[in-house]
Length: 358
Image (cartoon, rainbow, N blue to C red):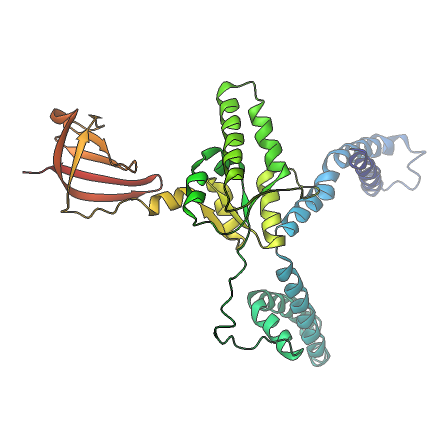
């Protein structure tokens, strides 16, 4: 807050000077402090400049700087280093080309070196970022650290250390992770940072009854996970300074430590995946494990309610998949034999259309 006011005050003085000088130029007065007619133009321009400077200076200084810092924080360090090396190489190539280009006749001799410098710097940074993995392998080979090809012998077939999983609030409250953990498919340790635990406690202490119930369920799920012999549940005291959002903290930790993220949050899933992080989504797992029925297959199902369209009936498979039955309204609360006519995959899950078997 203090820094913002200091920046605003500096901007106020700077733009007030600009307003004063603009007034002097407009009035062309040799001594504006003694010319009352000129002051009638200079003073309003100075006041307007000061007001403009007070309001727009943060948008020209601190706001872009903060936005740039947030953007740079989300860029992997490998890309930053590769981009810097590529930029330096591009500028070096441009410097070598500058000498012959300056010998060209005007205006080409002055324009071409500048244009070539911009193009070479951009191409160098872009190529380095896009081929950063190749650069890393090249540097390792030059330094003699290129790993030898792995030959699978009985002595090398050792268990690979599993990657730790960061749990977010949504997947803990959901509760299905307990059932998945009991099956033994999760090998890595489950990590719950303290800021996630604090968010769960905050939800559990909410004045809203529904949120309070969700928070308490999340704490109960953690108790159940802690009682399992495997995978191990660990509460870790790690945090990300200067980052307030829980999702953003999880992304930074996953990127810095090589963790995976387990979540049910669609937005967190997309943002983490765009940054190249490994994300396990229980909703996607549940959709993948649902029974696959093809058009023409038969099944027996109990119709429990009406559908949205005329004369439709609706039933559900054991995994929760909705089955829409044409002309099934007359069979509500009855088990009938059906024939699958169409299978529709949506973002919410799989939907099956069927008709009464003849």
